[in-house]
Length: 222
Image (cartoon, rainbow, N blue to C red; front, side, top):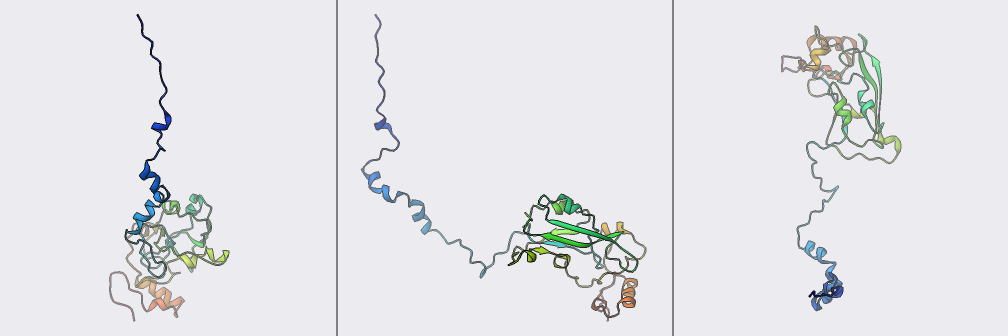
């Protein structure tokens, strides 16, 4: 003899997740402010910028910099690889040839025009990876703003790092007896007497002559 069982649907109202007891109904109007109330008792983490500036991380991608070698020559050789690698088309480079009377970088060419449009730049760092001479790096400077479009297009003079102590202002010849390979390998430690004499002969009023420190010495020239 078989028995028949009647399947009964459960009462949805009894098992509804939205069903609240008396206490839940009482606190329902303020339950949404629970996160707000708990946050009120936590320490304040608001940064009072620009009155209090917190230094960014060492590897922060900020304003680009065009670097120099130890004798003052520019590292940029105008190869345009940074411009080709930029996904935002924010970099424009125009190269020119070095001459015996105007040697700005080791080798045959230098970056005569260098522009970065910071209205387009996404700070991805692809240009840094593409640079074969480590001429282009990124600093931690993040305050990049302007009132006009023209102010956001940085030129070479805005990106090129100033002369460090002991460097000689280009243009001037490369270190005698060397090629661009010695520069790329980091074997140049500073300007030489011949470079300083060349600048004194062609630009006697150049201020870097009096502060240049020749390679192998620590004595500042008078």
